Image (cartoon, rainbow over all chains, first blue to last red; front, side):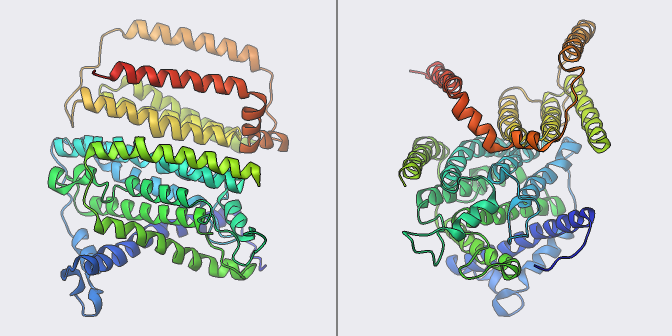
Length: 340
Length: 168
């Protein structure tokens, strides 16, 4: 263990800056790899593959420049302050999630005692930003989009929480660092080479988590809040330029955060077999990144493949299907926890 | 302990300003948004008292669900959109002021009477008390029956709501 002697103020500043950089960086990586490249391959879109020669590497830079030079339009009837604050609320909720995700044995902003619960609590704050945006735009389509988003996010928060409860019961802790260590040090019938990633026992929870987080991220097939054929762009319809970029970063940053959360809860987080101590601190972020990219690939694969659900189908799926499965999963996990 | 005092006063003043915003704003959506600040302040005070679990339950339930349902209901029914002025004034400021002062007086008298001499000491025992493990142990071991009774009550309310809302 190498020790650097720095005060807590400096440590806090470094941690804050790192997290402030992770969000746009993660959003851009997901946007570049999945939105521009994987989707282009899957849907045979030639445009984003063209600029700059090799696989269209220039496309994202071009898009970025395009967003930054757009005029910042605010509707005359908009509620100015609420309109301006809404994107910040969405990004703030994304920012807070990253505070508990461990990237190595010592690489975590604050390993809270109630880590998972905290992450899900702060991620629910983004709904307020969405409602603020939809209402302040003074636009019927925006308001409808915001209402759809609120109904959807409330409905799918329950399966998300229930999916996590199974993991919490099995690990016996809500701290994400503890959950990673449990998976690293676990064993499967006495065989402890790869530890015991919870996806093996909590595969129902993993499926639930993926479906529910897809809905929380308002990605297709759950993208009714921004359905372009019905609501233009939902709550984002009046946002342009830099403010729109904020929503984009919020959306993909949250996708990055939920993937990291799923990788930590179900795939063992930063740990890989045979690595510990200082090396785990050095390799940890890379391992976590590789795992979260696998999860993100699954999410975006579904996004690019399936058509949109109808509003009543969406609610029925959450209340009549996912929540009962989540409850059964908790029951089974409890029984096995007591039996073994 | 002066850091805690400063933090408390900052949070308390912000909460008071936001609470005044809740009752003074003429736009019902603004009032709901001010309420978010008040509830977040309450969560922050729970954290100051090392009651972490209660603090984040406050955030998840009150900000993440209750206020959102408020906003949802307001926007579905009577929200004035954009810069339209709402009509939220029923000209009873004096009566409201008297009632508010009365409640303030009663609360101050009660709290000073009950906890006036208590000095909260931030010991390890207190931190341990705020841990989720301790909270869940007391909830599911010592107070299991009241907990189950409350959940039955909520279930009854839920079923009642469904019955009332059904059309057939």
